[in-house]
Image 1: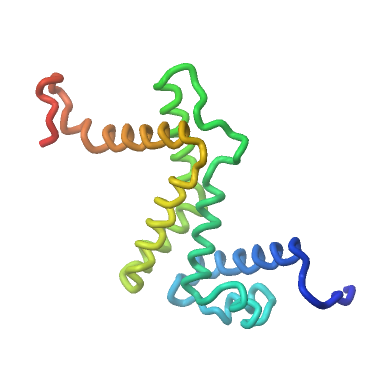
Image 2: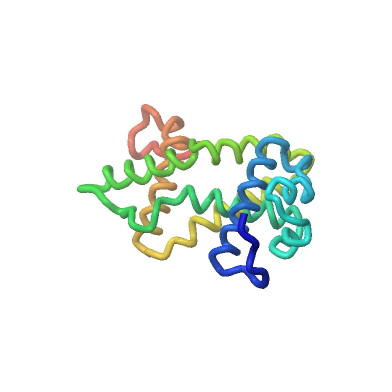
Length: 178
């Protein structure tokens, strides 16, 4: 193998190194759990020194936050995919709901959910951090129309799951959440 040129890595090399660290950390967090995953194990799996890892991530919590952030970013539709597309409100909401469900049942989302459920008893801040990261990701959308539609889709989904069963068989004036 060729000898490295030494010195500071290029931007591309630094990005590739960060991805390699996050890949290693993701595998270890998902297979061993948050509690059993060590910085040493991540460094070993990524084939780097602990010093290199600590240069990029302050501690295990920061590394886990970066893993979660990357998973969430990958769950978002690509930038070129229009969120608001359809002939009517029902089509638009159904399309948004399908996109949300596809993200929620993806392999990494399910693995993250399992990890949080398994580890939240010993690490209560873990669940809060993941929840906050998901909530924050909803508000990073830049298109105000898409944000409005997404909020409407979430409200409609909540209504459908929570309120609708309670209102079943009632007419409009009787619609009160009990």
